[in-house]
Length: 352
Image 1 (cartoon, rainbow, N blue to C red):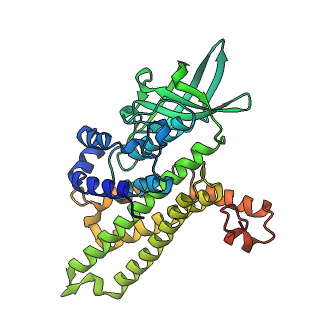
Image 2 (image 1 turned 180 degrees about the vertical axis):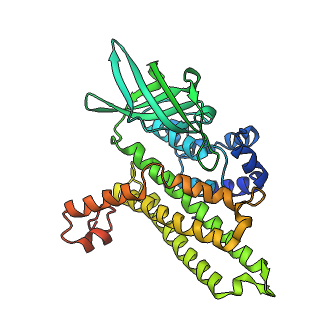
Image 3 (image 1 turned 90 degrees about the vertical axis):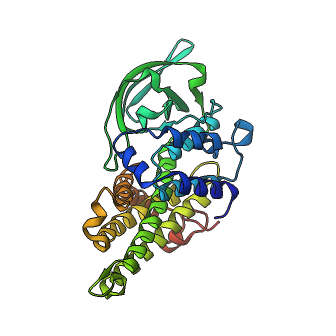
């Protein structure tokens, strides 16, 4: 996909993101200078309509930034900030170029208190919680759906990290909400979960492409027994298998992004998260087979990408979760046959 905003992101991340930066971030250092550059470019607002203060670009072009950020192992919450702003903008809440994040509000309770609102409960494994200005989530009250923005200045975090060293923090709280922190939305109740799965699918697709590129380059450069290891049949088989998995993952993620219409397409998001998760398991394992011990060293970039793949595949639903979703939809569908469900052009298992 070619677009000015994608070209901007690709050029910026290529110039700014280094292996040393990823290493520092994995040790807990917030990359303020990188975020400042991203903020000045306005990328956190890429998914927000112009009328709400955003870029107003086509949604599939904005979503492509998530894939590009994954391809560069971006050590800041750009994808999460884009998603948070999109949710806020859809509900008419303020948007911001400051770092933000999203979290599943399944363990939160929303209650009415006179003319105001109070939210209480806990959030687990919040991506980049300690580095974010606010956490955006969705909650239901009296059959209506709401977008809620929680200011992190009023939260106390128990800090933790995922395998890649990215913050995944936990907090318990009870907060009164201001008028600019909650608003009713027409989005479906499962929209945050679906959007999060699409976000991770695109990021994994980008990271998978980078891992494949690293493996091809290493196999051509690494000489063993008098010739590049890429000349050996076993390595060629590994690379061929990886290429097939990466292509399938990219296609699935792109289908999920292309089908975005007001909100994510449930079936295509399920397929995207399932397929990119499966590819991540296969490609990461083979990548370390190709590289041998050097792939796990701090000085080499591969482990930063494979650790992200291993972490992201379990967020916003695992392969088992999304397999069940698709299986139930196929059994309950009205498309007439399983073949029609799989090949239906509507994204909902039916012919458009």
